[in-house]
Length: 437
Ligand SMILES: CC(C)(COP(=O)(O)OP(=O)(O)OC[C@H]1O[C@@H](n2cnc3c(N)ncnc32)[C@H](O)[C@@H]1OP(=O)(O)O)[C@@H](O)C(=O)NCCC(=O)NCCS
Image 1 (cartoon, rainbow, N blue to C red):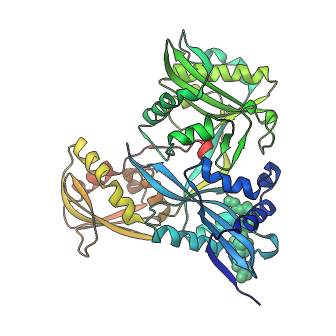
Image 2: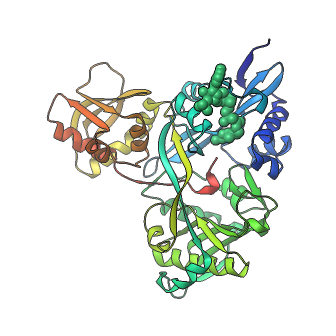
Image 3: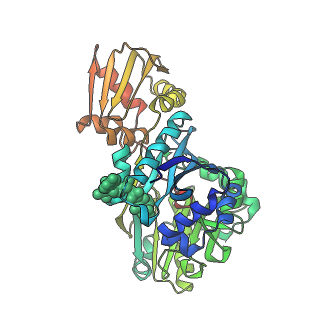
């Protein structure tokens, strides 16, 4: 019996990879993934590289596949870090339950470690076989996702509660709005973590062009979208992107629904005005329901207050393949968090958790990676908790006070706790659906 071999992409693998993906996902099969479309992803999206496809090969045939999506995620005020995102995990139905996906996932983490990629995140359903496979190899339960959903009729009844800005004009977005949209996207996510980096060509290829994305791997015709900007005088002060599944060539979304893919504005009134515009448009299209995934913060909690919020069985999992690289890349950000808050400390701190261990040295406000073997402080963190802390889903203090972190310190622990709380604050975690992989 030949053995199953695990390896990176080789020329020509695309045919076998696409065959396995189409056998395993009705979404790709229905959408019509072909080897040519798979190769074309490389031109559309900086995060897709064919040489980052992993395969399981049996007797010359691709029987399993995992794609690494190298998207950069926002982890600090201005800092984006590389994420070896896991996508399209698939094992040919004839070859399941013999460890192929588990071995491919182990290889994916190894590739991230060897290439110094600090993060590796994935989206999956909870609970289920896939979730258990990921958990077994070290992915944490980082964030349970949720969706805002409403009947359009019910929104009608509470219309007057929406904040609006007088004098706003809503117009179609044009490709030459790209710089201003990118500026808004960056500036309005100051306090957020997770949000994906978008290059100019990403905006033009995936959002403003003819192949409009509703997910990293799925796009459709512009007719299936509403792409509008909010204008105050000559200034663009917000924008919204919505998807109309009933007009799409293919989608797994309900056909009676309008989906708000993204909505951003300089204040609640602008987001409210854009939302009301979309609801009206959805009604004109004869739709019945509306949904969207938004950051759990204002202006969204305010504007979408009348919606029902559901945990939809989706979870974001993180494996943190290189805690040391994460700490090194974030050291400047940590230093400015300490400096801005007037917090000083002299200490060598080791972070230790089930699947990762690395240290830092703080001198005054300055933080740097430290890989010596003598530490003044040892911070033991629960694994799920560590992944939540680096994304700011929970702050250091929340985890410490609920018992997910213990701190052993040679000197006054209060100063140490203050420094750690300052370095790891609570933030708003969100990744917009277009960028999901
Ligand atoms: C999810 C999926 C990738 C798993 O692939 P797989 O190669 O069968 O995965 P593994 O063999 O590593 O593990 C699957 C199960 O087999 C078990 N298993 C692994 N090796 C085994 C062995 N030698 N003998 C018996 N059972 C074994 C695992 O414990 C696991 O069991 P569990 O569900 O009780 O936890 C596959 O079912 C698939 O392609 N599904 C459709 C696509 C999909 O949903 N992908 C995930 C998207 S996020």
